[in-house]
Length: 163
Image 1: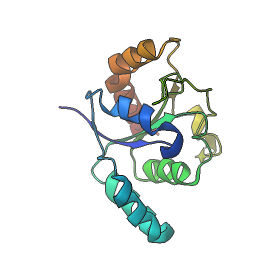
Image 2: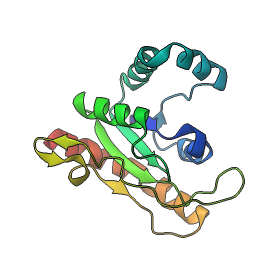
Image 3: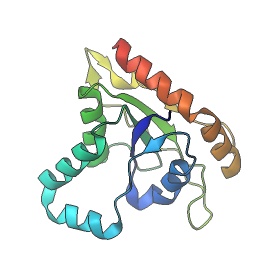
């Protein structure tokens, strides 16, 4: 049975790339909010956004951060990573910058979204892994993610259970 995961990503920059990963089908991901639904949630302010994220994370065993050029340091990415770790979920990052966007462009590698978090006196970035497919083509990256995402999620859950 596929694991249930929450996908965390920078919507404006990486929605197209995130949809490619979601469509792999190796895991069951959270249902993306339709643009109109998301606008409604945002109008409710930070508390409404937190409530929506919390609801989406409920019942998920892992948070998969899809790391693009501008993912690290974003307010809601940080909230999602912190919430995931504090609630005992596995956390893993997957670099998606080499997947093509809707215009057919690749991007630059972003920073580690786990930098800046401390867990038991250790940097979260020394505990949680960020996977960076070495392939150079979008198709090669897609295939590598498709072939490995289920194992990466299991590894993240094992790491979290050990910490």
